[in-house]
Each structure stands twice: as C-alpha cells, then as structure tokens.
Amino acid sequence: MATQKGIMNTAMVQAIGVRKQFGSTEILKGIDLTVERGSVTCLIGPSGSGKTTFLRCINHLEKVSAGRLYVDQELVGYEERNGLLHEKKEKDTARARMSAGMVFQRFNLFPHMTVLENIIEAPTRVAGRPKRDVIPEAQKLLERVGLGDRGMAYPQELSGGQQQRIAIARALAMKPKLMLFDEPTSALDPELVGEVLEVMQALAETGMTMVVVTHELGFARQVGDHVVFMDAGVVVESGSPDDVFNSPQHARTQAFLSKVL
Image (cartoon, rainbow, N blue to C red):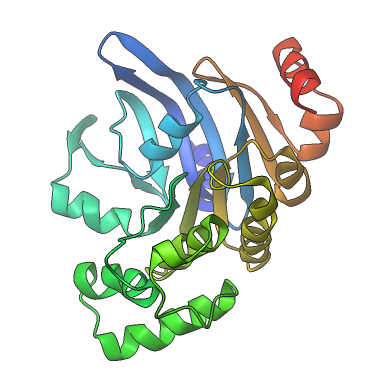
C-alpha cells in the first residue's frame, strides 16, 4: 500500500484498470498508466485504439465504466464511500474539470467573438474573475503563443495554425495544472503543423504536465518523456521515446512503427 501511495504522490494522472464501454462495445479494456508531474506523455497508436476516449475520461468528458482514474490524487468524476463509487454532482465535476485544459482536433473557437473575447470567456463567465484582471493575462498568453497583435481579430480571419494556438492560449487562461491535447495538428495543413508544435514544445519546457494524443511521431520522440503505444483498447507497450521507437519489444508495436516511421 505504501508503494501505491508513493506513486500517487508523484503522479498527476493515475489510471488503474480503467475500462470504458459504449453499449456492448468495450473501448478501453483495463488501462493502467501513470503520468508523472511535469512530464510529457504521448499516446500513439492506430485510429480506433482508444487514445482519444482515454483522454476524454481524464477530463470526465466520458465516464469510466470500471476502474479508478485520479488527477492530482483526486478521483475523476466520482467519490468513494465505503468502497463504492458514487458519481459527483455535475457542478463539482465541472469545477474539477477546470484544472485540466483541453485542446481538441478542431479549434472550437466561438466565431462571433474576437480572439481576446474567446480567451477571457471561461475565466470571467465560468471562474467568475473580473475582466480587469483577466484581460492583461489574456494579452500575455497571446504574446506567449506568438499572436500578441491579433486580439481584436475574429477566428475566421486567422489560419488554422493560428486558431489552434489561440485554442491553446484559451485553455491556459484557466491556469490548469494539466494540459490534454487530442491530435492538435491533425486538422492542419502540413505547413502549419510546425508553429503549433513549437508552442507545445515551449509549454513543455515550462514544466507543464501534458498528455498528448498525436500522430506526430517526431514530436513524441523529441519532446515526450514517456511514449505509450495503444491498440484495441489496451496499453501494448510504454517507455521512454528511445525504448519505444528504437527498440520496441512487442510485435504489434514493431508492426505499427514499421508502417509509420
């Protein structure tokens, strides 16, 4: 028990036997995974392997069907009483969800709002903070993602790469302890991918804990501290980028990498 507690103290995310079913279809089939504080964990694998579903479970956008999932030592979406799990009230889950920023494949910016308005929306409306405090912070975030002069622009006036960088700034505006990225470059033209990955790499260098679902294996190799290969709802193999990419142990990992590297 002491060993488990020690793991929890160093982990930002701890998944223990996590399962997820949609109807009779089991998408996650017992995920055991630890994400260390301050680390970048990259989830790779074929489409349909459960990567995005697991990411959404971390943020309780999907409810786990079985197992335990902790973020910063707190159960996600549930509380445990007398050994049984009881679902938390939605307002409590929503409050906890603010601790994890999420960046999606599609940018999901509000088209009728300016860039600055998009960034300050959640801190003011959800967190209830005054605009006079939030606007200067939002401007600094815009500068951080290289778009300090675009605060008054509307999303449709920006390229896809710029919109995704705004989405990252918007997620950071809630001052999360954890950032989740769901294939953040998959919807971008190839020439725009680099500018988003540069922002993500800079964020990683600040010590932000990140879980990244990605097909950008170069990013996973260079920036990731831990690489997890998933297939058919299970973790097939995990380890350092060097271990997974240069000397994969499992035949399924070897077959996947031989096709994509």
